[in-house]
Amino acid sequence: MRLYAKIFLCGIAIFSTAFLLAGYLLLMGAYKNELDREREIALKQYQYDKFTVQSELIYEWQTLDSKFGGEDRQSYGEEEFLEKNSIFESLIAKLGEGTAFYLERTRPLISNLPDGIDDTLVQDLEENAISYQFQNIGEESYLLTGGKIVQEQIAVYMLRVTDITTITERHQQLTEQFQKMYLAALAISMSVMLILSAFITKPLKKITLVAKRIAQGDYEERILSRGSDEIAELIESFNVMADSIEEKVEELSKALRQKEEFVANFAHELKTPLTSVIGYADMLYQRELPGQERKEAAWYIMNEGMRLEALSLKLMDLFVMGKNQFLLEEMEIGAVLENVLQGMEPILQEKGVNLIVKADSAYIKVEIDLFKTLIWNLIDNSIKAGSSKIHILGICQNSHYLIQVIDNGCGIPENEIEKITEAFYMVDKSRSRKQHGAGLGLALAEQIARIHGSILKIESREQEGTMIALELYCEGEMEDV
Image (tube, rainbow, N blue to C red; front, side, top):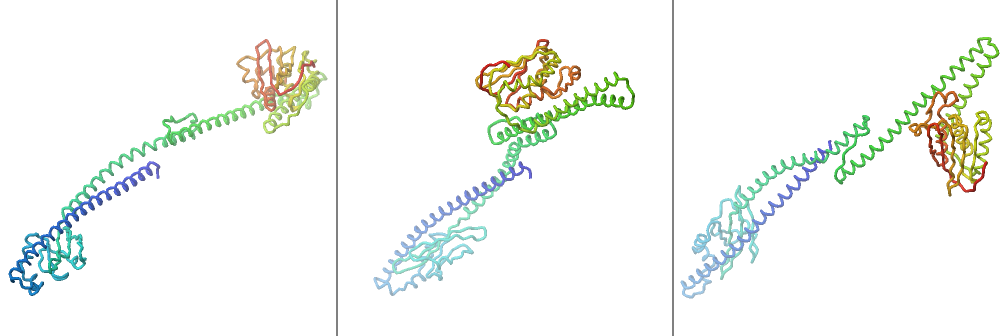
């Protein structure tokens, strides 16, 4: 069942139950109040009628006393007085319809009660008390009041009947009017609840629609949040979730693009040297070549093999660093840089590059092999950029150690600086391939810097040179290496 239908049905059920209960209590309360008021009136009327009967009995008994000339009234029995005297006929005529007198509880003297009245109330009358009873006969309603009247030596029972049909009819009319009002109110409330449930669930339908669009790939879709109620909070949370999904999808898309680019570039990097290596190897195998041609073919195979070896090692380093953490050890920076300088000496002499190292003495936390690889890559990039002079500066600044590699090479275009640390990115692809480059050097250096809690900061101008810097933690004083 849809949520708006649940809200609608629950609202209608609550409203109809509350309305019916309130109407029932109101009608029954009003009906009871009218019956109570009618009962009070009937009891007061009974008291008045009782006084009337007592007055008449006193008068008739005095008359009888005069008639017998003072003789003892006991000689004229009570029953003979009650049965032969016409006083009760005159009393019924005076009191009106709905009156009955009884000599005993089951012995009526005279009555003009409406047809069908059950007078068993007389049998249950208590001494010195007035009793009442409600009776319904067909569509008529009556209130019976009765009691015992004792005056002089005479005792009779009187029963009075009051017609209260108008009260029950009025109650029935009110009930019918309430039923009509209830049906009208129910119809109006159903319309209102239908509109309200649709209005309340509209944002939820919007969330569902937007969720479907996001599932179909429209990750930029959002919902406008208004107000500060629970639905607004839900929409806000949904938008936050959508932002997170969009970010994750962008990350996955970027990773996928990088993977595709990685595979494409790697395949391209392998294809050319492998084709050449296979071709020259086949030439050496199939033909008898002169000494110089054979030497050139072997040199080319060796050259391309070196390029493939460097490429595979760098790729392996990238993969390893993406999956492992490294232990950093505290080492003296001067010793580390001197070791780097010794390892680069043959290449520097071959290329005619002057490397100048000036570093403050300090101890820094590094992974020695990775750190040497980082410095080697920075120097190698400077050499490939055509630099004739490279400066390595180490400056201790309070708790940080700044390392700068500065060259006077061809520089990097300003719009290329942000991309230079991406894997396989090369500013000059033809020059890089001639120098066995694969566009992985700075990407590898960037990852090593991150392992050491730093990032590469690159400043460069075309035809003027490049400065690459990173910061590490340190303690120390200046020395030249």
